[in-house]
Amino acid sequence: MATASIGGLASGLNTAEIISQLITLESAPQLKLKGQLSTEQTRLSALQQLNARLATLAATSGSLAGTSQTTGPWSALKATSSNSAVTVTATNGAMPGAFSVTVGRTALAHQLAFADAHAKTDAVTGAGTDVVLKRAGEPDVTIATAGGTLEQVAAAINAADEGVRATLVKVTSSGGGGDTYRLLVESTTTGADSAFELTTADGSPLLGGASVRAGRDAAVAIGGIEATSGTNTFADITPGVTITLGTAAAGSADITVSRDATSRSAAVKALVNDLNGILDAIGTATAHNADATKAGVLSGDSTLRGVTAGLAETVYPTDGTSLAAYGIEVDRYGRFTFDEAAFAEAYAADPDATTAAITGASGFASRIEKVAKLASDKYDGMVTNAVNGKTAAIGRLNDSIAAWDDRLALRRTTLERQYTALETALSQLQSQSSWLSSQLSALTASKE
Image (cartoon, rainbow, N blue to C red; front, side):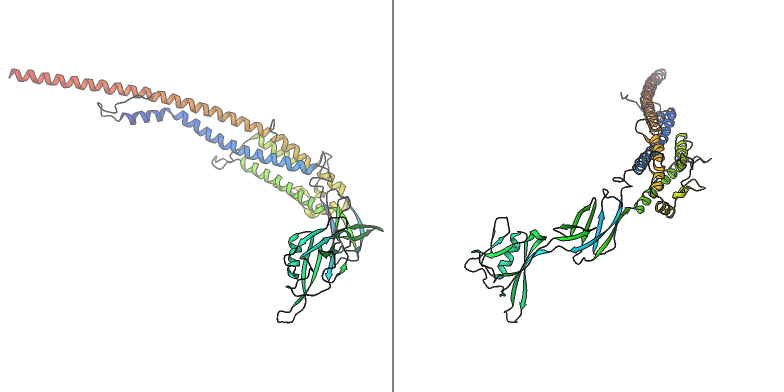
């Protein structure tokens, strides 16, 4: 509750300033609490950032620790072809292996090249102006061509979007507007099922009939077994393997599907880099220095020192062997190193042993995951508990600071009341003094 004060009205003192200075002196313990709060908030932020990075490391290493050959980092396969006109891709469902593919033929679209040549503006549809698209086993499609000129026929076929496309091919050029064209119509899809006919509305041949290039399926042979496709792509020709023929593909191609050592090496390298990043961040945060202004924000934190020690020990397999053969070591500065060439050599020599050294319940990635989870588990992780402890401490400091706010506000009210009373008393004394002075002056004047 606010208290009215009379600032120096009688005493001439700056009572407001005096009260503020007294409050400042009495708020020293609160200022100390605020300093502690700022320090704890900085430490909490640093712990939260490190905890988040440890949680990410746990997820990354856990993914790499999986032994699945169909999902995750170890599932990638590399597919190669010895023939540049025969391309191959492999999904995670493929099995490593090798086979030879012989190209029988590529796929073609059904095509009609009409015999008669005309100017673009010549009417070519006979008595009517429509043309009819026919396919075996499907209803006929009537296409209106407006005036029935050659140009309108081609435009109408394309506008109808019925799975065929028309092109006018200039066959003669006479300069004075007498250019003539032949109509070429082709299916938009390839394969033996792309056949069609195009006639006038009454069923008679259009433009003198057409020479036909029949659509055909592509064909390849693997080990004497022929496979066909309506397109030049053979999806899942073996489980997880897709082969695509170029338009000029011919001859044979040696196909190889193998585990992709490059992607595995990249995954291990990324894990090592993440591990070093965490160790560097913890080292910076916990760095000790005699000069407190240069020490790490979490200097002396035993929890983080324990995490560092646990991560450093992951380089040592439980069976007493070494990861050096797979390119993973620790240098004299305590940083992990990864030799990609050594890993590639080990993988080429024994992919199963190399995989086992990284994956599985006792592999390098799993050991990292265990330490990172122990630190960052959202329920009982060591760093998580430290974060919760800091959060609780900050809450208590905030409560104490708020209590001091109430205490200081009450103290200010008390001081304002005291100084107001002082000013009031002085004012009354001054009034009495003035009255007495005036009475004495009157008595002196009467005697004279």
